[in-house]
Length: 466
Ligand SMILES: O=P(O)(O)O[C@@H]1[C@@H](OP(=O)(O)O)[C@H](OP(=O)(O)O)[C@H](O)[C@H](OP(=O)(O)O)[C@H]1OP(=O)(O)O
Ligand SMILES: Nc1ncnc2c1ncn2[C@@H]1O[C@H](COP(=O)(O)OP(=O)(O)OP(=O)(O)O)[C@@H](O)[C@H]1O
Image (cartoon, protein in one colour):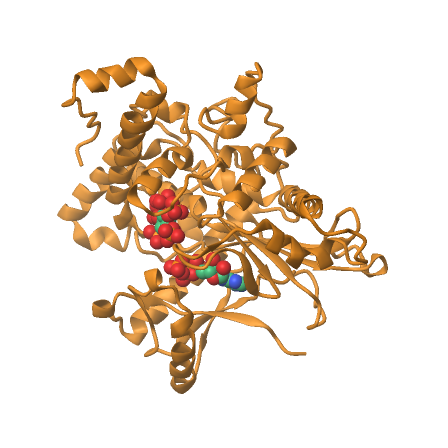
C-alpha cells in the first residue's frame, strides 16, 4: 500500500541561510521537543513528532519549484531550505490515524487554531480589564484596526474551551462565520473553507454545504436550499463538538493540574454569547468543564503553564538575561535552546510560584511560559472519514451524525517551541493590545470613560515601558 506522508522543510529569511548541520540540529530539536516534552503534556496519540529524513537534492529543488506558486505571498518572506536535503516526515493528519484506510475513502478534515482559552488569574496583572476580557477578544480590535482582518470575529476561545455544548456550538458557528486564521476545512486534502492567505477568504455556507452533503446525508435524502444548508452546518458543528470532547488518550502529565478550577474567570465579558445572556437577564454562564482526556483539556492545561502572565514573567526573563550577559557560556547548560530531553521535561513540572530570587526559579518560569505560548498558538486537526456500521471495531473512534457515521482522529500540530527571544515582543504586544482596547473599545462602551478621553485628549494610557 502507498504511504501518504507530509514533508516539512525548514524556512529562513533569505539573508540568514543555515548550514546543513544547523538545519539538521534545528530539525532534531523540533522532533525531540515533540517526543520528550509535548507528548508528555498532550498524550501519545495526539502528538505526531515525526522523523528526520534525507532526500535527494534534485527532488527537493523540483519540489520547491512546484510548490512556490502555491505559497501565499504573505508567507514568502522566508525561503524553503533546498540546500541541506533534510526534512521532517510526518503522517498526513488530514486522514484518521487509527487504522489504515483504503486510498479512495473520502476524507474531511477540520483544522482549528483555538488560541488562549483562559483569562489570566495572576496577581501580577496590572489592568483589571485583563481579568474580564480574554486576550483573543481584545486582540481582535487591534487586528481589525491594523488591517489584518476586515471584520472582527464573534469567536471567543473561552466558549470553545468551556466544555458546555451550547457555548461550544456558538464558538464553532462564529468560526464558520469569520474563519480568519482559526478555521480551515479540507476535503480529500484540499482546502474548501477558510483562508488560503490573508486576503483570500472563502465563507460561503451554501458552497460548504454542497461539499458536505455527501458526508452527512449520503443517501441524498435532503432537499437543497437554506434549510438544507443550515441543517448540514448544524450537523458539522455537532460532529466537531463531539470529537473535541472525546477522550482518545492519556498522558504522563495528565493529572498535573496547573490551576485549581475555582481560580480565574470561566467566561469572557466580551463574548457575544455572554452578552446575549446578559441581555436576556441571565448572568451566570455555564461552564460544564472539559473531560480530562480530551485534547482541549490537555491544550488548556499546557496553556495554563503561563501562571504569572507576561507581566509577572517579564522581570524573571530580565533576571535570566542579566545572568546570561554575565555568564554567556551558561546558555547551553541552562538548556535555553535545547536539548529538549527528559531532564528538560522534568524541570517543567515544578509549579511553585514562590519566587526565591534565584536564576533557577526564573528560568523554570520562562521555560514554562514558552510551552504555554506554544500551546496558545497550536492547531487541532480533526480528521473524519465515513464508515459503515459493520466496519466499526473497538480500535476505531467513531462519531455518529444523524444519517451517517465517521471514524475520526484528533491531533495537535504546530508544536514548535516558541523562541526565548520572543518574550520582549510578547510583553510589548500585550501592552499594545490592552491599551488599544481600553482606549478605543471600552471607553466607547462606557460613557463616563468616553467623556474622560474626550475632555483630556492627552490622556495616554501607557502601562508598560516598551
Ligand atoms: O501573538 P499572537 O497571538 O498574535 O500569535 C501569532 C499568530 O497570530 P494570530 O494571533 O494567531 O493571528 C501568528 O499567526 P499568523 O502567522 O499571523 O497566521 C503566528 O502563529 C505567530 O507565531 P510565530 O511568531 O510565527 O511563531 C503568533 O505569535 P506568537 O505570539 O505565538 O509568537
Ligand atoms: N502532518 C500534517 N498533515 C496534514 N497537514 C499538515 C501537517 N502539518 C502541517 N499541515 C498543514 O500545514 C499548515 C502549516 O503547518 P505548520 O504551521 O506546522 O508549518 P510551519 O512550518 O510552522 O509554517 P508557517 O510558518 O507558515 O506556520 C498547517 O496549518 C496544516 O494546515
